[in-house]
Amino acid sequence: MMADKVSLRKLDLADMPAAAAVHRASFDERLPTLSGLHTTEEDVGFWSAVVFKDCQIWGAEEGGRLVGVIAFLEDWIDQLYVLPEAQGHGIGSRLLDVAKSAYPVLSLWTFQRNAPARRFYEKHGFFVVDESDGAGNEEKEPDVLYKWEARLHRL
Image (cartoon, rainbow, N blue to C red; front, side, top):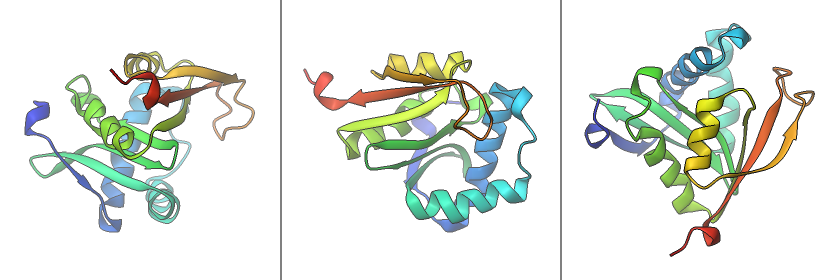
C-alpha cells in the first residue's frame, strides 16, 4: 500500500457503513479486549445518526476501498481510524492534516494503553493535557486527553 495511491475525500451519509467498518476493524485490532461492545448495526447507526450529524468526515480510499477515516468538528477530533493493514503508510497523517488545516487547535481522547496511537499523536505535535481513570467513557478504560495548537508548530 502506497500513500500516494490513496485519495482523500469528504464522505457522505452513504459512506457511513464503510466508515463504521474501518472504525470497528481498527478498534478491535488495537483493543481486542474491548471488541464486541457494539453490533455492526449499532456501529453503523452511531456513525450515521451521531458522527455524520455532528462532524466533518473525510475518508482515505485506495482502489475504491475505504482504508481510513477522520471525523472532526471545531477544536475536536472525534474519530480517527486506519485499517490495520494500511497503518504505517502515511494515511493517518494525511487525514490528520485535513483537520489541522481546518482548525488551529484540536483535542482528542485516546486510551492510555493504545501505545501506537499515543506515539502517532505525539509525533504529530499533540501533547497530554489530562488523564482519566475511564469512569467517564463507555468502555470504562483509562484514557488520555491530547491537544495540538498550530501556533506551537509554525516555522
